[in-house]
Length: 184
Image 1 (cartoon, rainbow, N blue to C red):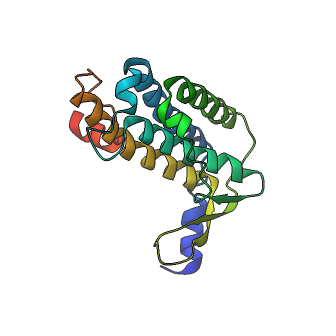
Image 2: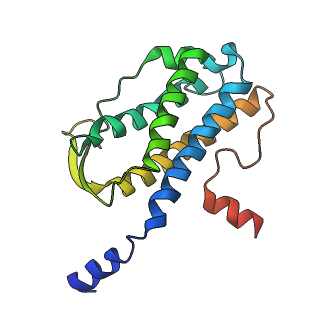
Image 3: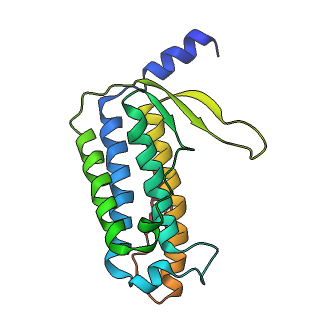
């Protein structure tokens, strides 16, 4: 495929519904986080005995990535290594609920914002022995990355919640393509 053919193909991806679908996917992930926060006890939220990290640590990590995304939108430069790692969100259901609501509002605002496909810079460490890598991306690609990253952590949270005896929806923490495949 030539460079021109690739550019034409990519230009065809700029459909108006893609942003709304990506925002919807992000909201779905945040709603799943909210479902967990509404059913688990404070004790189980912080418990690290069912894995290497607590459900709270996974929720905090999901929110950290969203915070980095929103913090970087203003200057079109997202640094995923600049996570706050707020232990209060990790250890306190009330703080997590508050932080989750804040992220949900920011995602919801994206439904009506005029952002088109914008080139942005993304920075993140990929090896512990090397400096962070900085690459070009788009807002849409980063939204997709937030969705897949969140689903991965939601799947771990689902396993932890089930190990404590919580009943959760069978689709919780599953990739949309997996849900579609299983229903076919």
